[in-house]
Structures are given as structure tokens and as C-alpha cells.
Length: 331
Image 1 (cartoon, rainbow, N blue to C red):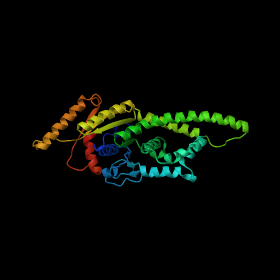
Image 2 (image 1 turned 30 degrees about the vertical axis):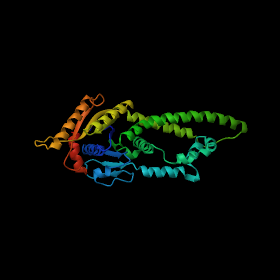
Image 3 (image 1 turned 120 degrees about the horizontal axis):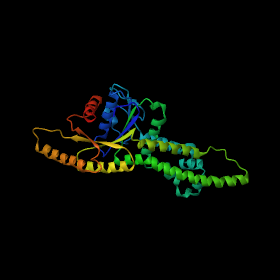
Image 4 (image 1 turned 45 degrees about the horizontal axis):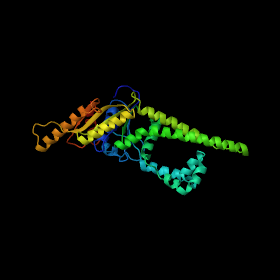
């Protein structure tokens, strides 16, 4: 995982509460301590990177993390800030965002005809999936912006399973949707051009189709990145319980369906061996052993590299603790 200077992306995800953030932060610290300028990004709306690093990383900006040997930066994507920007953009110049967008697409008349349905009010509200769309826009920045050129490792602390699957499937959805919009606009443009030629009117407005086509090209790049076995890997994080492992199995199947590379499974919070087990610990350990057997027998998980992390008697918080955890998991 640390070999080579080519940029690599690691996404860590799984059921909520299994320790994704601690694992992602520990991996980022390990990369930095092995000479890789590293960026760790939280796409989880309920951020906890600041808690893991014991440092204020809020604000939606790149923040340097103190402690590792090579540069390590953290970024918590701020969905509230992005929603506010969405609202501001949609209300610019006193118009609705939908009307402005549809005007740019040459479909303004359609909006006026459907005005009684109050589509503008509906769509000026940030839609479901905006958090994932914001994360996609950040991925585009990682690919294109000189600001991120220095990083050879980018680690994603992703949201719980459902959000993450939406994130990974969004490029396909947008690509298909933009394609349909472009086809529709092409038909409308042909009709309006014929009318303009009759009345001798010219429209000098910039073509919104060009912008959509560029966005579509970016979506293709993001989709290819998510599926690139040479540069991208999704690491599933779980705990040794039946419910968590069952969800991990479904996640693995969904990732394979999306053609996202998955190689490793981290099982977190395993009780360490003890010579003097209390009754509770003994029962708990047997339950965990049964859960680990489930992994070995599961068709989706058995082929993954199994990495185990013990339940420790300390809170994993701050760079030294993350280095300690990383030395165990990523050895």
C-alpha cells in the first residue's frame, strides 16, 4: 500500500459505528510516516475526523495535521456550507435556480408553462444526494486542481453504507441523465433554430450544452477513477458481530456490482486473548469467533485479505494513538 509514488486513493467504509474514521485516520498517518504527502477526506455528514486527530479540522478547508513526518492534511467536506452556497446560487438575481438553469438549457418556456406546479420552489431546496454530489465535486478537484498535485495518497473516510453506495453510483446516474438532457435539448434547439431562421433572429447566448458536455466528461473521469484497480481501492471496515458482517457482505456485493475494487476487510474491536476470562468476556469472545467463521464461509468476504484490529484499553485519539493503531492494522 505504501510502495510507489503514483497517486492512490483509498476509501474506507462500512456500517455506522464500526470505527471507519479511526481506521482511515490511522492509515493516513501511516502513509505520511512512510514518506507520502497524504490527504484524508471525510465525506460523512457526521464528521469525526477532528475527534480522531484531537484537532479542529472543521471549516471545509485543507487543514495541516500536526505530528506526522511527511505532510498530512485533512478536509471535512462541509455539507451545510455547500447547501447555503446552493441556495444563494439558486436565488441569484431574484430568479429561481431552476428557472435560471432551464433558461440556460433553452427550456425556460417549459418552466413557465409548469409554473403552477411550483417546481421552482421544490427544486430550489437542496435535493437528496447533495452531500454525495459535493463529494463528487471534490473528487473532480483532486483530479484537476494544482492545489492537490502534491498528494500521493488520498484517504476517504466515507459515510455509512447507503450514502457511500449513492456516492459511488452517482457518476453513472449523472452521466446517463446529462445524456438524456443533451438529446432533449438538441431536439428543442433544432426546432427553435428553424423558427429563428424564419423570423431572422439570432441568439448569441453561450451554449449551455457545452458546459453540460464538459460536466459529463468529468463524470466519466470520476467513474473511471472509482473503478481503476491500479489507483483505487475500497477497504471494508466491520466489527465481529452477525449484523455488521451481514451488512459488510451486502456492501461487498454492491461494490462488485459497481466494479469498485475491493481487496481488504478490516475487522475491528476484536477482544484480545486472556488467561483469566470473566464470564462475560468468554461469551463475548465465542460470539466473535463465530462471527469470524461467518467471514471465512461468506462467498463475498472470504476472498478478501482479512486484517484484524484488537479492542484496546485506550481511546484512539490523536496522532500518537493513531500511529499505534496503524502499526497493528496496516503492518
